[in-house]
Length: 116
Image 1: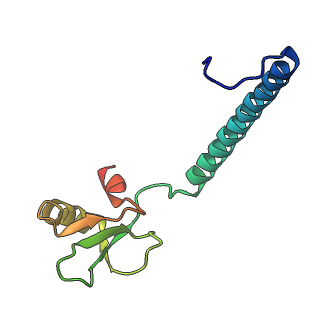
Image 2 (image 1 turned 180 degrees about the vertical axis):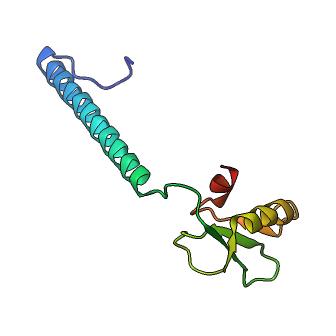
């Protein structure tokens, strides 16, 4: 680290060292605040998440012919599709996902509740 253009007098070196310490403390404080914020948001997500698997699922057909349909939870915020029950969703999952005709919604992740 001797390549850094540092001043040679003690006073300026000490000032720089104090400033570096302050920046490190500030970064640690920000890190702790972000950690607390992340934990708070995780708790809010847990509280807002549905308690169990939904009663219904939806299959949303895509408008482009070569695109696969999307499987949603019944409570997904993305609109569209016809309602089906859990057994029908499991059959669709077994048949159409392997053939590439059905994909899981990335927002509501219905495969997680179907695996339960």
